Amino acid sequence: QVQLVESGGGLVQAGGSLRLSCAASGRTYSSYAMGWFRQAPGKERDVVAAINWSGSNAYYAASVKGRFTISRDNAKNTLYLQMNSLKPEDTAVYYCAATLSTALITTTRRYDYWGQGTQVTVSS
Image 1 (cartoon, rainbow, N blue to C red):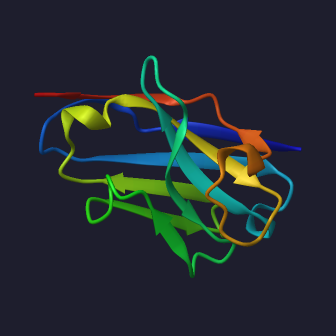
Image 2: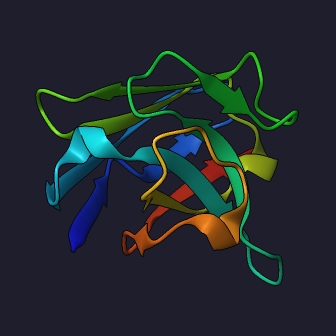
């Protein structure tokens, strides 16, 4: 079993930055790939960024590429999402998730464990 707890969300003006963190506990953190997802009201939950077990390979959705950076610290059992140049359309609940695969996964249904989510609101 894996427990995931997100933090770092909040209200920010357009153009600002936030850093999300996801603390993991339970099974060996470095054994699985991780991802950040977001869900806006009335929309499906979509992948924002994903990373493999070692942090050597990352994926970004087209809408965030060049603005967001996913990283992980396996020594601290923590996943991060640095979000720069935020836009109002980035407003959503952000979730971190873990998959038992060590390889990078971008498909939502392939993820096995989810955090409770953290709200990010970007004002114009």
